[in-house]
Image (cartoon, rainbow, N blue to C red; front, side):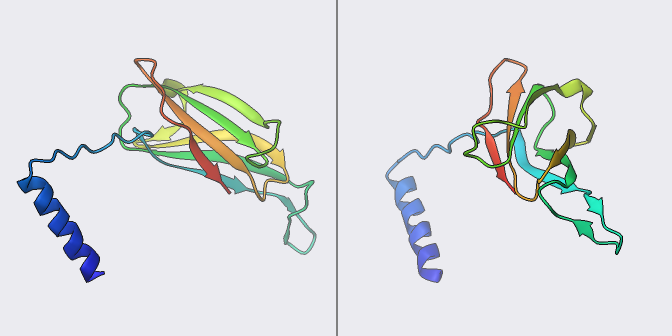
Length: 140
């Protein structure tokens, strides 16, 4: 680890001395910091356990953490059983001014779906100028 750090410092020093300009790439997801799928609920069995079968209905939410909330127009969401399945369970756009949020956290209620033990989602932020972030992909 120390050798890697030494090499990194040496390369940085050489770049500065040689006048090499290093440009940081802009974050393709900004202002989105993180997105996760939260799946809760399920059918409660007589013994109090939760049924985890393919027919169990689960309450599905997408939770977004943001760096910044200015200049966001819409949030576009896709929800699927897995990334390669042809059909989507949900393709929805949300007006940012109407979504449930707390400071820099957005909670999108996506609905109730069967068999959501494993699922896949995408979140795209549409900015006020019409530009879009890259799709933030989530596998649960």
